[in-house]
Length: 344
Image (tube, rainbow, N blue to C red; front, side, top):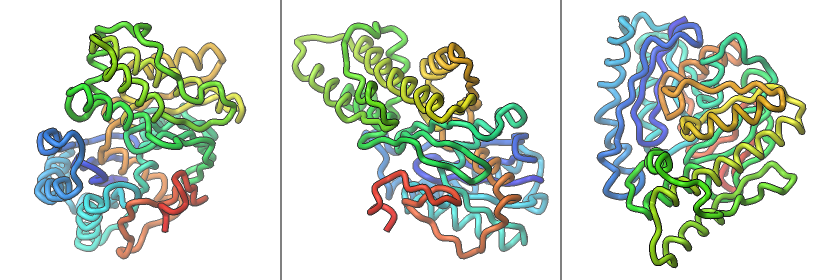
C-alpha cells in the first residue's frame, strides 16, 4: 500500500511517500526558518502563507522522487490534529482535494501519533507492543504507554514549558536564532557540562511529570547576573540538565510500568546526547531503546504516512469532513495531555 503523508503542523511544509508502513520512498521537507528567524519564533500568519506557497511544490517533489503519480496512491494522510490551526488548515485542504479527485481513502493523523510511529517505522519488526514512548519537542514533552495501534495511556507530561520550548527560549535569549535546540547542541559540543549546576526540576519526585520553566529561569539568572560567561558552557550545562531529567523520568516510567522497550520521538529526539545517554542508561537495566531515524524526528510527511498505514487498517478511513483542530485528544482512548480547557 502506497500512502502520501502531508504535514503542515507548524513551520515545515512536508510530504512523504511510504509503502507498507515503513518503506520510505520520499520525504520532502521545505523549511521556513528564513521566514521566521527575524522574529525568534514561529509567526502563525507567516507560517500559513508559506505553507500555501509550498504545499503543491512539495507534494509534486515527493511524488517525483518516489517515481509515481497521484493515481498510483492507495491513500492520502494528513496531520489534522494538534498544531497551529492556520497551518493545519492548509494541509487538510490539500489532502481532502487529493482524496476526492483520486477517489482514495483519507486518513487524519494526530500530530503526536506521527512522532510515536517514527520509531515503529524505523524498527517495524523489533518494536513490539506494549512499549513506553517518550515524545519530546517544542510543543510537548510526555510519556505514553503504547498499548496497541492507536491506543495510548498517559503516564506523565510537562506542567509548563516543554523541553524543546525551554531550549528555544534560551537560545533566543543567547542570540542563537531559531530553531534553538540545534544551536544549543552545536555550542554544547565545545562546552563543559559541569560548569553550571543548573537545577533538574522534579527529577527526584516520584511522579512522571516534567517541568522546565524553573530551569529556564535559572539559566536566565546566570545570564543576567554573571559578569562574564562562556556560551559553550551555558549551552552544555543546560543541555545536560534537560537530558538528565528526561532520562531519569523515562527509566522510572519503564520500571513502574514493567516495560522492557522504550521508544523515542519528537524533534528533540534528534539530540545526540539524549539518544546516547537514554540508550546507555536503559541498557544497564536490561531495557531496549528504539530510536527513530534522524530524518523522522522533526516534523515530516513520511511519519504521517507511516502511521496512516497501520491506523487505516485498525480504524478505517475518515470522512472528507474531518476538521483541523489546534488541540485534540490523542488516540481512541482520547488522552488529554494538556489542560482540559484546551480541548473545548
